[in-house]
Image 1: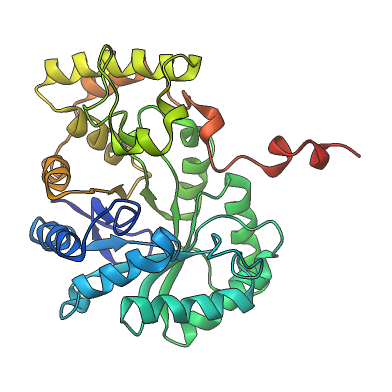
Image 2: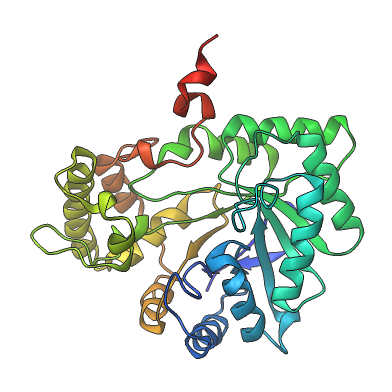
Length: 339
């Protein structure tokens, strides 16, 4: 396992992060399975675990908390808030009122007195940067969080938050967690240059592109991954974007074979090769998934392989741009772009 400094924090983290989204109801995992995955991840050198309050509506945090009992100090623990927690309209967003309440809920579920990294899960257009950063700064000074970061923020919102922190003399985001893979490279043209400019650590999620780059999705085969059962439209090859992805996957599979790599090694090695990226978040649902992903921990792609990837999917290009989560609201709601 390789280790890198998380932004400008001085904290050393593994280049692979254990993501806990599949822990609980979503991934149909038991506590024994989660504990076994956490055990194997730590044994394999992973030292950062990333979860969120809304993963199975708190169940993921509870499972992580039970799995790390007795070894909290050996783990860089990250969670997130901001996405809806139930149906109540006030149980979401990044207002001071909600963040203060929900952090206490997360600490209780995790069974800890602090988290190392607290992340705003999505930019909240209804709340000012000053409001959110002020609340996070106070939580940091209270010792409940060590650092805080953003997740899936558009580049211009990262910049706005940096300037708000300076203007109001508040602590600033030290990390960003964007979606990034060989098939979704759009952040190379806007988010990653900004994170490099401001010295943010980058924890990239979905490096296997929801399973497209796992090796389980190939032309001529029935797609039976767990993600395809949840989001079938993302794997419907009758759709042009998915046909483009399948074409790229077939070319990448040939490249991986020629380089003596698995698809997972190619995919994770690509993400961690970018100088702006600190770590790639893996989200294993089974111990076998974890082992296949840990095998990529020390993968370093040659310049020739990286050049060949660029020829298959050009730098800065998203093959499924409609699936991005950092699209400015005005591009999604016509009312916001009309007087």
